[in-house]
Image (cartoon, rainbow, N blue to C red; front, side, top):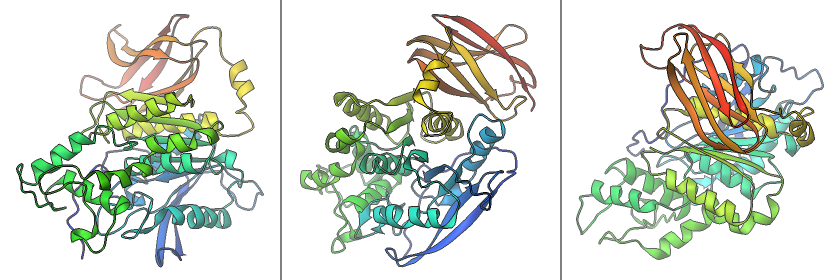
Length: 427
């Protein structure tokens, strides 16, 4: 029976121009899940399986309550960058991580949902390599995801660094830090006072907790097929949570840190995330710092999903900069750094929905990235803070009636100076 399925985190508005390339439905039978599964596969405009070339790959994992179709518009973000020659031509595959009876599999092996970790690693990846002209070189494979998929992407990258060169995770629950907020919401949804009788239909947070329990502590002999981590008094059952911890990237870092030297790690999260995910990300920062593992984490002013189009633009840029492609050697990137801060790309220009901005810094220092109109008025402050030397990316999405069509100026200021470039907004 299909349970009530509220919208947790997956819906977002993304406006893109029609694709010049194609997104195809790849259908194959999963021996592990014992059913046909469908993956969405984006093939870039220059894709030609007869050419003998092999394309780099982005494996994108979708969020809870969703399917690959829910996120297929992100392929337009990738294509926009490819057509602007700001991103390399890449194949993108969105496998299906949905599973009954709750919001999704969390891409782990579970007695309730099925063997989803093994499905991705031993079925989806070989199927993609056997069906499409994609690279067999792990240095040309990236894994990316949002929400549940951000958790899955980071987890797979840490567990299988031999399969992926880069990870970009957006708004993923990367640890159990801050789970008290979520648990408090669960108690409120289930009556607010003991004795508690928990139900997945009580509200969004309850449904999410049952989804997590189905992934980490399934028990087909228990009510709702899971061991729930709260007792009837509203107290945490430590024995249950102790079995959750090993699944989370924040815990995996401890066991995997010696094998992560070659993995490029990017993740971000909005500081107004309504699902309580932000402290789960900052805890992963602490874990990576504790073991000296290089990474890039970006906090931004936003919630769980509304800025996903912009954040994936940043994620794609990070991936492009760290895949093992002919123009991407570390020496070449280091040598190309300018003596002063530089705006290296603004695309598309003219633009409509959003503008991608790439810039480089010669040294770590304070940065302010802003947008000004032709009257000399600042209309957007995109970034202010300390950034490391190297390449960075940002996105401007002009909202509101006060921002009309016309000429605008992107200004980058740092300790080494300031520069301005003109862009044209066409609404």
